[in-house]
Image 1 (spheres, rainbow, N blue to C red):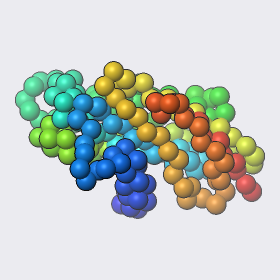
Image 2 (tube, helix red, strand yellow):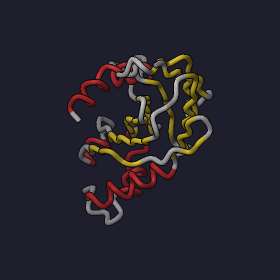
Image 3 (cartoon, rainbow, N blue to C red):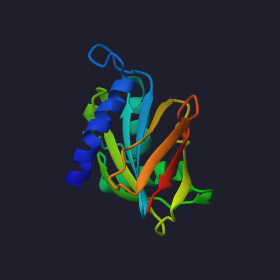
Length: 185
């Protein structure tokens, strides 16, 4: 996991710069930022999703997560929220639905979320049979809490030399996107 976290550190920073153009002097207060980094490999896909609630929506979000209202996020509550998020995500490879599995999650203290400095990090993975050489398309959709959310989606630089990202297309809201890539022998 440490190698993966290190691999995603720079892209996460770059996503933050895109999300917060003047990050040093501004913070999204009334939105739930959902930044997804998509890592495509020969036998699977990983979605690294950073979820950052602004202070104006943090209490609303926490009320839906902390179901027993004890001020803490238990493992069960974290798992339930991860399941809800997973249910709001759709991933398709060449038109085929891919089944997502939660690979990991990290949760800041609820106080950090309320202050607008906490980031919930979730990683989902999907496996598939090794892809044949040629062109492929990965489509992603995030329908999680659209009334309060803003979205970012971006492909990570593949670790494998067999995968080459050709093009990325995103909707205006970036809640949906497609990544065209090729597999080379």
